[in-house]
Length: 122
Image (tube, rainbow, N blue to C red; front, side, top):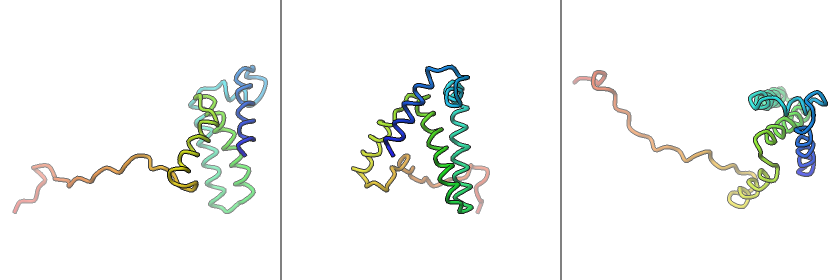
Protein backbone atom coordinates (compact mmCIF):
# COMPACT_ATOMS: atom_id res chain seq x y z
CA UNK A 1 0.00 0.00 0.00
CA UNK A 2 2.84 2.39 0.77
CA UNK A 3 3.95 2.07 -2.85
CA UNK A 4 0.49 3.12 -4.07
CA UNK A 5 0.44 6.14 -1.79
CA UNK A 6 3.99 7.06 -2.78
CA UNK A 7 2.97 6.92 -6.46
CA UNK A 8 -0.13 8.98 -5.72
CA UNK A 9 1.99 11.53 -3.86
CA UNK A 10 4.36 11.86 -6.83
CA UNK A 11 1.36 12.39 -9.12
CA UNK A 12 0.03 15.08 -6.78
CA UNK A 13 3.44 16.78 -6.78
CA UNK A 14 3.42 16.71 -10.58
CA UNK A 15 -0.05 18.29 -10.55
CA UNK A 16 1.33 21.14 -8.43
CA UNK A 17 3.36 22.16 -11.48
CA UNK A 18 0.45 21.80 -13.91
CA UNK A 19 -2.24 24.28 -14.90
CA UNK A 20 -5.34 24.07 -12.67
CA UNK A 21 -7.47 23.41 -15.75
CA UNK A 22 -5.48 20.29 -16.65
CA UNK A 23 -7.05 17.92 -14.10
CA UNK A 24 -9.17 17.59 -10.97
CA UNK A 25 -6.00 17.03 -8.94
CA UNK A 26 -4.30 20.11 -10.39
CA UNK A 27 -7.40 22.19 -9.63
CA UNK A 28 -7.46 20.91 -6.04
CA UNK A 29 -3.73 21.41 -5.36
CA UNK A 30 -3.97 24.98 -6.62
CA UNK A 31 -6.88 25.77 -4.29
CA UNK A 32 -6.34 27.13 -0.80
CA UNK A 33 -5.42 24.89 2.10
CA UNK A 34 -8.81 25.38 3.77
CA UNK A 35 -10.60 23.89 0.75
CA UNK A 36 -8.27 20.88 0.74
CA UNK A 37 -8.74 20.38 4.48
CA UNK A 38 -12.51 20.62 4.02
CA UNK A 39 -12.34 17.85 1.40
CA UNK A 40 -10.44 15.64 3.87
CA UNK A 41 -13.09 16.28 6.52
CA UNK A 42 -15.93 15.58 4.06
CA UNK A 43 -14.40 12.29 2.96
CA UNK A 44 -13.72 11.23 6.56
CA UNK A 45 -17.35 11.94 7.38
CA UNK A 46 -18.50 9.89 4.40
CA UNK A 47 -16.36 6.95 5.56
CA UNK A 48 -17.95 7.20 9.00
CA UNK A 49 -21.48 7.34 7.60
CA UNK A 50 -20.93 4.34 5.35
CA UNK A 51 -19.31 2.39 8.20
CA UNK A 52 -22.21 3.14 10.52
CA UNK A 53 -24.61 1.93 7.82
CA UNK A 54 -22.46 -1.22 7.41
CA UNK A 55 -21.89 -0.59 3.68
CA UNK A 56 -18.60 -2.42 3.19
CA UNK A 57 -18.03 -1.58 -0.49
CA UNK A 58 -18.88 2.08 0.07
CA UNK A 59 -16.44 2.23 3.01
CA UNK A 60 -13.74 0.95 0.65
CA UNK A 61 -14.56 3.55 -2.02
CA UNK A 62 -14.87 6.44 0.42
CA UNK A 63 -11.64 5.39 2.15
CA UNK A 64 -9.84 5.59 -1.19
CA UNK A 65 -11.24 9.12 -1.63
CA UNK A 66 -10.08 9.99 1.90
CA UNK A 67 -6.54 8.74 1.24
CA UNK A 68 -6.45 10.69 -2.04
CA UNK A 69 -7.50 13.95 -0.38
CA UNK A 70 -5.22 13.38 2.61
CA UNK A 71 -2.32 12.89 0.21
CA UNK A 72 -3.19 16.19 -1.50
CA UNK A 73 -3.24 17.88 1.92
CA UNK A 74 0.15 16.38 2.79
CA UNK A 75 1.59 17.83 -0.41
CA UNK A 76 0.01 21.22 0.31
CA UNK A 77 1.65 21.44 3.74
CA UNK A 78 4.96 19.86 2.73
CA UNK A 79 4.54 16.51 4.48
CA UNK A 80 5.81 13.46 2.61
CA UNK A 81 4.50 9.91 2.93
CA UNK A 82 7.99 8.94 4.09
CA UNK A 83 7.63 11.21 7.11
CA UNK A 84 4.31 9.58 7.99
CA UNK A 85 5.79 6.07 7.57
CA UNK A 86 8.72 7.08 9.78
CA UNK A 87 6.34 8.27 12.52
CA UNK A 88 4.31 5.08 12.25
CA UNK A 89 7.51 3.04 12.57
CA UNK A 90 8.56 5.05 15.62
CA UNK A 91 5.21 4.40 17.29
CA UNK A 92 5.38 0.72 16.44
CA UNK A 93 8.77 0.48 18.12
CA UNK A 94 7.49 2.23 21.24
CA UNK A 95 3.97 0.88 21.62
CA UNK A 96 3.28 -1.80 19.04
CA UNK A 97 1.69 -1.46 15.65
CA UNK A 98 -1.90 -1.13 16.85
CA UNK A 99 -1.36 1.63 19.39
CA UNK A 100 -1.62 5.39 19.01
CA UNK A 101 0.22 7.97 21.07
CA UNK A 102 -1.84 10.09 23.41
CA UNK A 103 -2.26 13.64 22.14
CA UNK A 104 -0.96 15.11 25.40
CA UNK A 105 -0.67 13.99 28.98
CA UNK A 106 -3.90 14.43 30.94
CA UNK A 107 -4.01 17.49 33.16
CA UNK A 108 -4.09 17.00 36.90
CA UNK A 109 -7.57 17.68 38.19
CA UNK A 110 -7.90 20.59 40.55
CA UNK A 111 -10.56 20.87 43.18
CA UNK A 112 -12.93 23.56 42.04
CA UNK A 113 -13.74 26.22 44.56
CA UNK A 114 -16.81 28.36 43.85
CA UNK A 115 -16.35 32.12 43.85
CA UNK A 116 -16.85 33.85 47.22
CA UNK A 117 -20.40 34.99 46.51
CA UNK A 118 -21.55 31.51 45.46
CA UNK A 119 -20.29 29.53 48.46
CA UNK A 120 -22.84 27.95 50.76
CA UNK A 121 -23.17 29.68 54.04
CA UNK A 122 -23.52 27.63 57.05
